[in-house]
Length: 378
Image 1 (tube, rainbow, N blue to C red):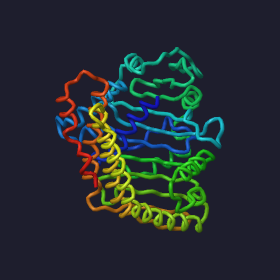
Image 2: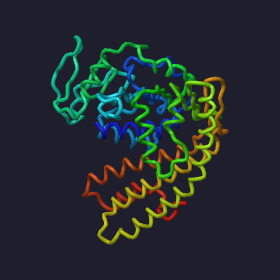
Image 3: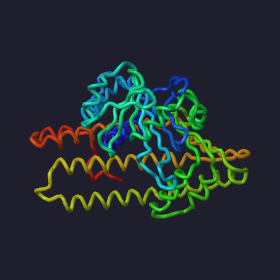
C-alpha cells in the first residue's frame, strides 16, 4: 500500500501541474468520508491532452506505473487521496487513509488484483461485494463499478462503502474550487487535523510560529491549483472569528517570508549531502545507487526553486471570518514543473535499472543523461 500511495502521489503532485486548463465539472465525492480531515483530488486525464505525442518522459512514467502498480496512466481520470480519523482521534493513523481512482473506461479487475501481489478473500458488506485483504496490514479493494477502484484498510473501506454523494462536509468545500483546477483539496478541523499540525511543529528544525495555535483557529477550508493562471495557487480558510482570520493571514505572510529566507540554508544542506556522497562513493560503490542519489538531490534542488518562486509571490488577506492566501505569478509555474517531470521520469528509469543488475553500464548512463551532475547543484 505504501509503495502504491507513494507512486501515485509522486506522479500526481509533481506531474499534474503541467496539465492544460479545462473544465473539471462537478467533483466526484461519492467515496469521500464525512470523517476525513484532508482530501486531495487530482485530474489525471488532462496530462494526456497536454503532453506532446511521443514524449519519452511520459512514456517512461506510464510504463513505471503499469509495471509497479498495474495502472494505465492513459486511462486514469482522477485520483482522490483522503485522510480520516482512526480508532484514536488524537493520533494520526495511516489505517484511515483511502485511495480512490476513477478510470475513463472499464478496467480488468482480475488483472488489477493480481498486480497488487496480495491475497484477497471475497467478502460482503451491506450487500456489496468487495475483496478483503487476508492481512490486517494491507488494503482491501472495492470495485463499485467497472471504472472505479476504492482502496483502504477494511474498516475504512466499509465506512466508505456506506457513504453517499454529498454526505461529507468536505464535499461542499471541494466543489467550492474553481472548475478547471488541476489540483483541488479541502480540510476540516478535527482532532486528527490538530494532531498533524502538532507533529509538523515537532519535526520543524526552527519553529517561527505555533502552527496549532494559528491554523487551529481555522474550522475548514479549500485550496486549488491552476498552473496556467496568473494566480496558480489559492487557499481559503474559514476561521472561528474575525480576529482569528486576521491572525491566520498575517502569520501566513510571515511564514512565507521566513520560508523564502530559509531557501539558502536548504541549498547549503543539499551541497553538504552531495559532498558527503562524493566522499563515500569509492570505486566499489554501485553506479546505479549513485545515480539514484543524484536524481533525488536534483529533485530536491528543483523543489527549492519552486518553493523560492511560490513563497516570494505569496500574499494573504482577511475579510470577516475568512482568510485568503494567494500566489500570483505571471505565466503560472509550468516552466518549473517541466524540470520536475524530467527528474521524475529519470527516477522511474533508475528504479527499474536498480531492479535489473545485469544491465550494461551504457544503459545506466543513457537513463541518467537528463540528470544534472551533483556539481551543478546551486
